[in-house]
Amino acid sequence: MARGQEASAEEGEMIVSHGYSFYGDLKYPADFEHYDYVNPDAPKGGELSYAALGTFDSMNPYTVKGRRGELSWIMYESLLGDGPADAYGEAYGLLAESLEYPATKDWVIFHMRPEAKFSDGTPVTAEDVMFSHNLLLEQGLPSYAAAVKKRIPRVEVLDEHTIKFYFTPGISRRSLIDQVGGVPVWSKKWFEESGARLDESRMETSPGSGPYMIDRIDVNRRIVYKRNPDYWGKDLAINQGRHNFDSIRVEYFGDDTASFEAFKAGEYTFRVEGDSKKWATSYNFPKIQAGQVVKAELPDGTPPTPSGIVFNLRREVMQDKNLREALSLAFNFEWTNESLQYNLFEQRASFSQDTPLMATGAPEGAELEFLKSLGDVVPAEMLTEEARMPHSSDGSRLTDRRNLRRAMKLLDEAGWPVGSDGVRRNADGKTLSLTLLFNTAAEGTLGAILENYVNNVQAMGIDITLEKVDPAQYTLREREFDYDLVFDSYRPFLGTGTGLMQMYGSSEAAFSVFNPAGLASPMVDAIIEASLMAENAEEEETSLRALDRALRFEFFMIPVWYKADYWVSYYDQYGYPEPLPPYDLGYLDFWWYDAEKAEALKTAGALR
Image (cartoon, rainbow, N blue to C red; front, top):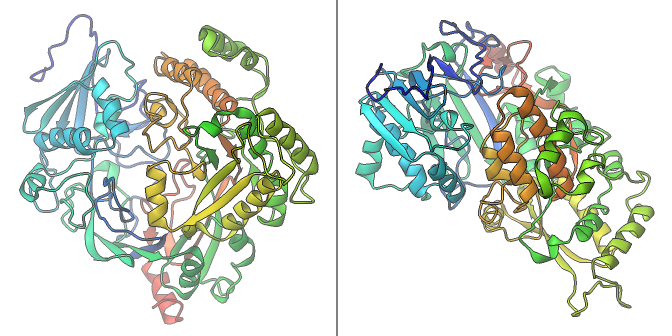
């Protein structure tokens, strides 16, 4: 047994492994040669370039001020690598070659690879890991620090390449080992010598241990990353067939119109399309017709991002559910999809749309028993009503008169009657005035959709303003929760974890940037807590289905639309494995460059 690993009888069996999943079921054995979905013989070379919108004033990805540069996190690695794209909830050793822990998961020891080194040639040590862990607690996001300090009371460096994390007794063992295993590791030496802070905006970066490093920066115009020719981990099994490009270039544009024109001109080579109008009408330019640019719909096995118009529940006016219901009725999905989005979308209802975790109908069986077990925090109607679904609208016109009448009645019931001047005021004579925050970098179809939504809200007698602000202002106001409504998103879930508390929990609702609504629901808290204590996959699935039901019941977002596939276009000089894995498109990870095709594009004048 390693130093520091004295196991008590209560701890039971000791587990030593090359990877980690909560239930211990790993897809890949210790001697695996590469992930199943990669091309292990993928050629190395070439460049992939794509666009980012807005501006950046920092290459520190963890700054709490300013806007970080795209991919500024790419240089840094962790003890456990990113999970494979064909298995959910698993991670395999990266900086660590193995880990060991008792069956009780009261602690974990990571044995690090002694060959790991930063790009400046210095070794990555256990001291660097402990320093990085503590730096995040001292200078990272408050919501992160508050959660981690409760759960990880102590860290111990056992030797230069061995580190042990202790976990708080009596709490869920979810998101503990994978949490500490996923902390980015920075150079303690660099931070101490430079005096830099993790929370500051700066262009200087600490050396990373990852496959890419910064090549050049042109502020607000371009960032180029180059593959580190001396990358220590290039021969690891988890890295085979990955990190194939010699360089990754990010081109910045003020808005998506300029970005798209630059793509057509060949200024960058890969585009994930999010604008339905462009996808339906603009991909008919000559390079598409000549086969020089590929337009493709590729399968996406992840649940769609829960995006929508989010209510800021921190504002007193937004506490009234009738008011929120009325505001939701102003959104006409059917008209929007037909008139502005070319019928390319489905209407989203769930936070885990089209997965086994999506709640349907009224609760029954194990889910019903689970909800009953939580007691009075679950409203009685939750036990009998069907899961909330978005309202339907008449798609033939922007304003659905039936929904408008229903919304007007709800506003009256909420204490906001309409006056003789057509404006809604409360009993104190205060006008119902709202702001919907919008990032101008996302102009285009989304801007038109929100303008039409605002028109419908105004027709109800509400003084609402669509506040269009530039990306820098948007970031600042979003961090300060300075809005009544905002077009934003949450993360979908396929498994449980303490990250659910950061997104949906009460304890961090006042300051968590992952919870734009400021949702604080005792029912949601109780479901997440119970989910974290699930003892098997069936219990976990039941609790998460109940969570989806509860989040929809609390109604803090107007759900909008989703699509089941990725829309991508790219210059025909790339290859990718087929079939693609379910959980990642992977164009920065396991796609590769075809030099022969690239040369043909250059000869034809399609690319410079």
